Every structure is written in C-alpha cells, then in structure tokens.
Image (cartoon, rainbow, N blue to C red):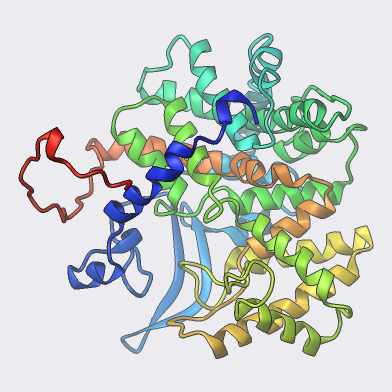
Length: 456
C-alpha cells in the first residue's frame, strides 16, 4: 500500500462517531412526509422541473384508474422504436438521435450529413493530451480517467466559462465527438501500464459513426462486422437519454443551474453515472450471470434455473443481497421499451457469434425472474427485465472489456446530458436548491476542558 492510500487507524477509531451522529431513522421520513430519494413510497418521483426533451410512459389511464402498461420512451416526442426502425440499413442512428436531442428536431438528410461531418472534424483532442493527461495516471476506473480528462479539457478552451448558447453547443458537440476517444484511450493506457498488455492508439476515422469508431479504436485490428456496428449503434441510441429525473441528468441540471461551465457539469454527470445504482448496473448483471453459470448445469432446465434464482432472491446465493439484477425499474412497470427493442438485436448478434446457448439462459431467466419476484415480494407494479439485463451480454459478445461498460454508457448519454444542460440554461434561470428538514436540537456549549472523551 503506497503512502497516499495507507490505512490510518485514526479514522477507524472515529468511524463510530459518524455512524452515531449521522444516522436518521427511516421512520422519520414517513412521519414527517419527507420523500427519501425524492420519491414517494410508490416510487413516483417528486416533480422538480419541466422538460421538452423526453418522456417515459409506464402507466395509462384506464376508466379513470392509473393502470400499468407496456413502457414507452419518447425522444422529443418521437418513439425510440420509430427512430430505430427509420434507421434500418443505415448507419448514424445515434448521431441522428444526438441531433434530435440537442437541437430539438429531426435533421434532414443534408443537416445530418453536415452534423456528422462536424462531429468527424471535432473528433480530435489537443496535441500531446493523450500522453500528458490520459496516460499520465492510468486507472482501472476509466470513469475517473474520463472525468479527469473532461475537467482538464477546460484548460485548453479559451472560452470555457462562456455560457452563451452557441458556445455551450460547440462545447457539447465537441464532447459528444471525443467521448469515445477518452474512454478507449483511457482503457488502453490502463491495459498497458497495469496489465502489461500492448498499447493501441488508433486514430478515429472522420467518415465513420460513433459506434464504428469505438470498435475501430478498441480493437487491435480495427475490424468489425456490419452487424456489430449496427447493434452498438442501437445500444448507444437506447442509452442516449432517459428523462430529466435520472441521477446523472439531474446532476447535470443542478450543476448547470449554479452557473458553472460545461466541463464541470459534464464531469459531475460522469461522477454520478459511475455509481453502481446508476450506470454500473449492467456490471452487476454480468457478475450475477457469472455466478449463475457456475451453479446452473443445464441452461435449458427451467426448474433448475428457477431454483437457483430463488436462492439469489432469498439472499442465500451470489452477493446475498436478495436482488436479481437486471429485473425491475424505478419507472417502468410491465416492460422496459429499451429491453424489448434491444432483445431482437441481441438474438441476431448471439446467432452470429455462436452464443445461442447463453442466449437460452438469458431467455429462461427473463421468464422465471418476474414470476419469482411477484411471488416473493410485495410489489406495487409489474416487474420486467430492464435494458441492463442484456446490455452487458451484448458488450461481452462485442469483445468490449468490462472496464468499459459504464464508460460506454457515458459515450451514449453525453447527448442527453448536453440537451438537459442547454434546456436548463435556456429555460430555468434559477438555481436548484431543494429543502432539507433539520433535526438539529440546540445544545449548550461545553468548554474544552469539560468535554468527555468519546473514544474511551
């Protein structure tokens, strides 16, 4: 252990003070009608703002009653299913979506070509940036590496603090362009210096899409199949945006509302996304799947799978937390539209890769887990697979290392963050400052000499 990270017993001795003085009874939240996590007991989020960017539908009004329905996800009013269907046999599905999210309308063919050309031209980073910043302190935590890179980029921007919309647009589109480079180069630096593997720094091709460039820069031979690029393009589109209430988009808006610069707002969003309760969810799915594969012999045996999932749900297997990862969503009820759309592409890729056996396991878990959760848990809405259930499997089939799973989420979501930052600047003009109810009780001051030692 190096000097910087040495374990100091002083902090272990003091830990109990934080636990004693910072613990708040969960019952107080209900008693005082405080929405923990800005959500009520049914999981509905507190209204904190208005947005034109996207809409998530999980319930319908049927005969005056709120009824769970199949989920829908709309970007600027357009159903993501239609965006994917409309881009069939074409590339740049993600770029078309990024244009839609940032500028608020679908581009014409000429506008899309101009936007993609602009993205290609901006897909470059300052001279020696890779050597001096990305390779300087490599880390297995690529999200931290990306955050450091984004904050450092502000030093290269003469207009970093300029909040005019045209300047923020320029900054956001530049970040959309170079996020794949920051992610992939950060991984290669880590893989070289920490894992003693070969270093690859492939230049992006300005004529290629974000998905194509990601695979090109990641792989030693720079090769990929059309299906691989299409599946990754669709994955990026489906992860590009998910409402203003998700943690990282809300973080973007909170930081933006203070008047901070684009680099700080996006860096804060990255820090939010890396949390295992947000962007790291597909990693938990993959770790769970590793465990299931180690304990289930027959991937076609639904009874064997059901029995082991029951152990996981009971806290008797895997991480003993009683969760089947990739199942359920904070908003969606009967289905996650992203998962429904994505599954067809997952099956096609599994067939190309000869991984039908693993696909069968996923299918059987998808059938068994919702039934099991419904039987064992008190739920107020339906339980269904979410997009994280399959995304990690896709990345595995594409040969993307797990260290890049969450960074790849960021590569997609930078489009949504950019849209929320611009909307906040244009429309809100008020710092976000929610209220916290204080539980502080006034105490008489005690002279130093008369205080008791709490560590005895």
